[in-house]
Image (tube, rainbow, N blue to C red):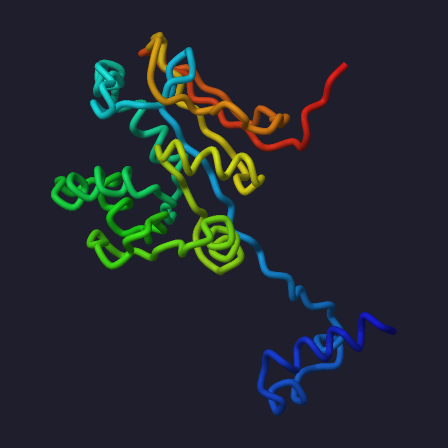
Amino acid sequence: MAWVRKAIVAYCASVDMSEFLAMPTELKLQPQNTETQMRKLKIFEHISLDGVIQASGEDDFPYADWTVPYRTPAGRDELLAAHGGRFDLLLGRRTYDMWSGFWPKAPSSPMADGLNAATKYVATHRPESLEWGPFEGLGPDIVKGIRRIKSQDGPNLILWGSSTLTSTLLEHGLADEVLLVVYPVLMGKGKRFFAEGTPPRSFELASTKAMPSGVILSTYKFAGPLKTG
């Protein structure tokens, strides 16, 4: 049988031959899973009702830190659970620089410890100037770099902020899930999550939870091309 031959060849390639020959026959004939499990890439975003994700005072944006009044221990715990036990980060250079000035100096906490321990994969033209580690530049071809990293063994990847990089992920179908932390506010201006020209997509609601502060956490999975009537 073809699958028997494939199983034996695959297993022989991964174990010592003397160990293989000593195995019972029934174990030698078991089908072996030789496929590599790709890492999931999840986009996390704090977002207003009108789609703004910008929270810093750059580019004449007047509403820095507008998420602060809605931060609660319960919301923090939900985000920690969404990160999972281990994760790596995918960051644009601007977000990386902002975070590198804060998190390495932050007091120890589950969130700070997780972010500091994560490998930061950074979209940058100046990888030699990165300091907050562990880190790795994505290389000149960002899309190719992300695909390479997703195919490697390791924990899931999480992207925070990085609006330009977010658009690239959506355009090329590289993200597996989107977690939107939606705040009950209108900003009127600022960088938006879904940029002009983002390809049409369908999403499936995986989970949603309303917090007492009025914040809603909703997780969506990509469900393919947009479906119309």
